[in-house]
Image (cartoon, rainbow over all chains, first blue to last red):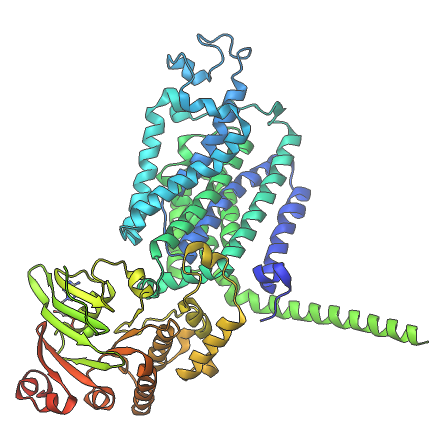
Length: 386
Length: 249
Ligand SMILES: Nc1ncnc2c1ncn2[C@@H]1O[C@H](COP(=O)(O)OP(=O)(O)OP(=O)(O)O)[C@@H](O)[C@H]1O
Ligand SMILES: [Mg+2]
């Protein structure tokens, strides 16, 4: 096994190809072929790819199925939405309220003072930290509480689902503090900068791509580290890992937290690009959809899960434009089909049928590349001799 | 519990575990010497696997003490028991079928065992050499970079033994290590056990009496969670009680 430096230790040759292809599609092909409305829509789908990527590590690698990833997506999104909402609620633009200077939904709910936990969200650096820290810390608490007690498999999945349901109910119930069922809406500027302009949308799209690629690099690092192999080992023979001196719960907690952190970044980018955040992205249905994205793309594949999120979300929009009432059934059917017929999703199909040809083609290119540089250098040497 | 210190590697005293009133291990006393190969035999359901489960912390005892080099194990976590030097092979070979033989051994190597240690773990010359060395001992040198899922049943047994050897435990516990092995493989395994017991104690659970005769220093016969008899293989084999409950059929 030869590796060429840092990159080589993180990416196999085929991973490099997958990474470059994905980067080209997201950075070049889509921006050149879609108008800003469609591109922005892709940016929104991409925010789900963060969740799917986290699930690939957590569920695909570690065997920890979470049916509550919407919780972390939502928390990340809400953290940023709180900041943006405060910025949009300055005393001038809220002058008609009973209490100017607080978010409109608080005013509608007869709240006359900004609640204490909203105060820190005036600070942008605090908000950025909170986007990452709050969901991850919450995941850590869940992880420690569950995995140390050896709760796993279906039981863990059901508990995460219950947490998603509880959080949704909590947010809807505490309307005055959270914006209730409508969520936090009417977000306008980020540090004085109009987030609804076409230019801002372009910027957010590229920031989103950049962050997604960064998360992919992190995933590569994790999956190719010894920790990645321990996760795979744990999935198959948990007791063997435990009785080889590892504290299995810590590894599950780690990968669950990582999945949560990715989801939170996705959630924050969602708020930024779509302009609001609501409980409808936290609950049971969105959380299960995220799992379907990952399953369709291929839960064992970092890249597969990303394509899964993009393609299924795109299909949903296309499909529900024409047959809105059929979408849920189509989604269910898709999931059943994947589980029964292609348990490794699109990535599995690719590995089975496409990959061989791609690898062969890659071999050819690299060979011609090598021989052409060699002839060039031979010619160079010949020149020097003359 | 304030039991007196002993020279034994392992001293199990008054060990009892009951599952809903059923005593799978009942007031057991067992002492294992330095460098000894102890074989535990007994009919199905006698409680042999349960004894190993208790020692390695997989099952918690209802009563009694287990002291390993005079350290009480009954209250320790599984990973601490492993770290103190107790290794255990499962009854059904348990290896990581999705990883290569090399990776199986490397994961078992006692380095980078916590989350961040394993995240930033770097393969070095010592580890690679150690894995190759163990692979040679367990006769899997040529399969080092093959997926462990492709190994035969017997080779998986060896690999699991290798995964324990690389941790260099002072007490090695093997649950039916030659199940599914051919006669030649059994001989190889017996040789391997002789070699590895030079500097550690080994507890083996086995049904194959020929293999037992080949390796045992001392045999313990377990029946209904209790010791029926204990001693050298020839005495045990001819004990009428043993013949009646175990060897007779
Ligand atoms: N966790 C458990 N809960 C309930 N009963 C158990 C548990 N573990 C073992 N037993 C029971 O304890 C008894 C002893 O089981 P054990 O697996 O130790 O037998 P064994 O001697 O290893 O048998 P074999 O030769 O078949 O492997 C059996 O009756 C088994 O059903
Ligand atoms: Mg058994």
